[in-house]
Image (cartoon, rainbow, N blue to C red):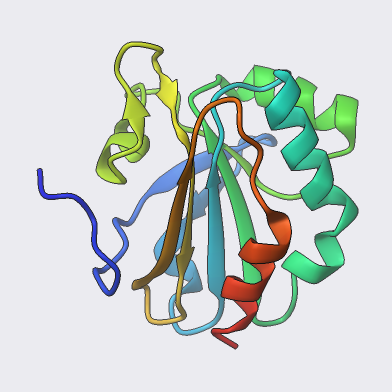
Length: 154
């Protein structure tokens, strides 16, 4: 598989959120730019800090022109408990089965650990990859940088 490049069409997917609702990336095409946050594990320290950081700034991430999606390989029941515990009221998507298929499509699945790497993509309104960043597992993301890249598209 060829690694994704800026300007490539983002691989489409449909995954279930923490409420069991299907979310399809291409449904935002022509309407919203999307920030996709792949995170390794629900309830882990760095992931909790990042996702509660998004929660605390949700009004900056979610606008009429932007959306945020967080993806892990945890089962729906785990991400629902995680969302409920921490008040995460934005889509947390389960790439649980087939395990890691979406993370693999984005070339961010860690085969050894069985989870996505700490990676982010910003998808423009036309469904193309406009920006990507890949952080080391223990290294939290710069949410300001993500917001700049997301808002540069609208």
